[in-house]
Length: 366
Image 1 (cartoon, rainbow, N blue to C red):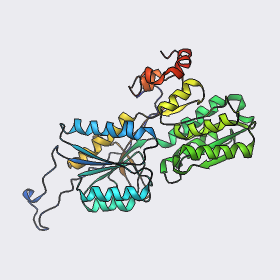
Image 2: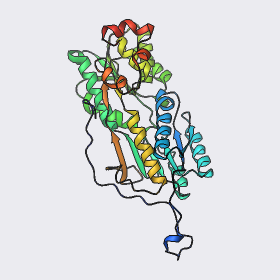
Image 3: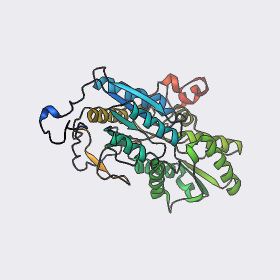
Image 4: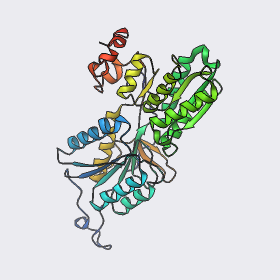
């Protein structure tokens, strides 16, 4: 992985997952009685959680679709649904895909607990489930995401580096993600493991639905409570919220304080170029999407995950889930070329629009 990537420790060998076929009759054990393994003409149900964060529509969906096509000689189909941050809607979407008899599901849960019943319904219907990006509860067959505690640690370490000797001069504000997202709790845990004892957290929020407007309101409340001269930095769990936070800071006349982020959204990268946001966490979506597609196709075709998933994780309901955790990179103005541009996520022209051309020139991004 890249020079700044975090190494993933090798875990125990993943268990082999059998195909979902069943004997025609309970007493018939002949090979002929088993349901035939699926070929390339499979149907993959993809359920993503929301469309406010740019990554899902821009990266995850098209990348998974492309990889499924590649793995199935162009014969595999991806049936896509976005829950728009509505857990009840996502459960309905699972029900629809079960009714339509998809061969496998990839689910990025809006609410990791609320999805458990739907995951069980899919499994009871013989449809394996890959938990994508968030560790859904229920009888999932596989999981891929990023090392989420490490994401929080990377953010916390970057914030401390940016603060330097000013770390003890005032308060920081922590803007965590949604309480319904298990990843948000892991980001928070990782950040606290780095920040606790080294900075004073003046205000901390779990931001409803990860919405930038909610982060903006929370930040306005923090400024009012703490005083604009007392805030020295902001931990923001992602780029979307960082945008709302920075808007609130500007409105209060606060500038030149570090704000973290995550997802390497185009607007976030541009704010980093302009010096408004200190950093983001670049998560290589192509790698995560490829792994999810590989897991899904293998499960749909009744193949083992041994060659794909070398690690295991435990969810609150399921132990020893075959898993792949993808490394992450701290993205600052110093390594934009070596990350999002090198990987083809954005071009220089996309980042360096007329508004940011001068700032791009100053950091050699031309």
